[in-house]
Image (cartoon, rainbow, N blue to C red; front, top):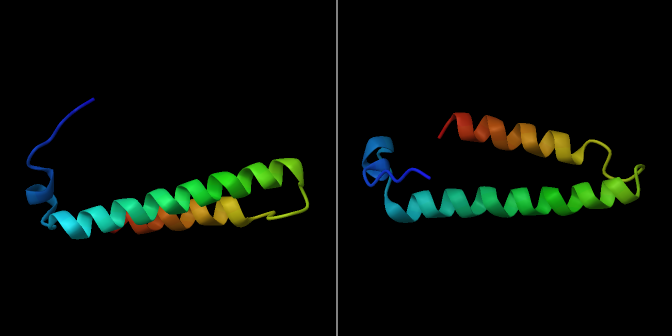
Length: 64
């Protein structure tokens, strides 16, 4: 594990904005994980939800 105590300064963002972004992405990932479990049990449900969600998160993170 690497600690970078200058991370926020390097990316020029304040503590609360960074925290909000990270928590938002984390909640989205947890939700997509649960949806993935449902899809695993019921393959006809949420057919493209997880893949589209992961692509959306990846796109958003590339602009952070």
